[in-house]
Image 1 (tube, one colour):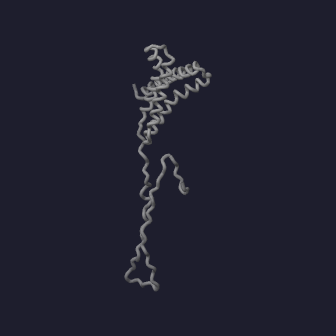
Image 2: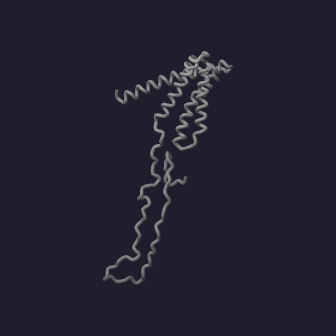
Image 3: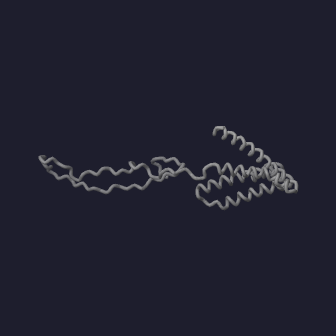
Length: 189
């Protein structure tokens, strides 16, 4: 099996599991909400909030890890929403061990799928672009000789030339370019 075929098969399986597990989990949350007095549209709103929040929090967790920002609150919220989703699945089940296990499968499959997909992509950021511009941007212009050499047989000028003072070259600060932000020359940011 070629790598391309394998990727296509994995994608089809991923979509099938995601669709069915997501639909079952959404339906359980909707049905439990409606059974406890919520109108149908609020049942669907609850289902969207509970089930998609776990996906969003997983994405946010990855983004914060990449940016080396604290992840404690996001991780705690992810665990809380995952447990809420599992609790809803189990509440809808027949009150037996097997009933609870079978009812938890869609939610567990959905959460496992999200975890696998989010852990597949590299979590490290790409190498940053160099902050320094090419060296030739800040080249120091050649210094003029204080006294140009004169041929020995030339006549000296009647008025002496002013002395050329060699000033130190200006040192410019490094240019800092924000990533993913276009650099516009001539505009102060």
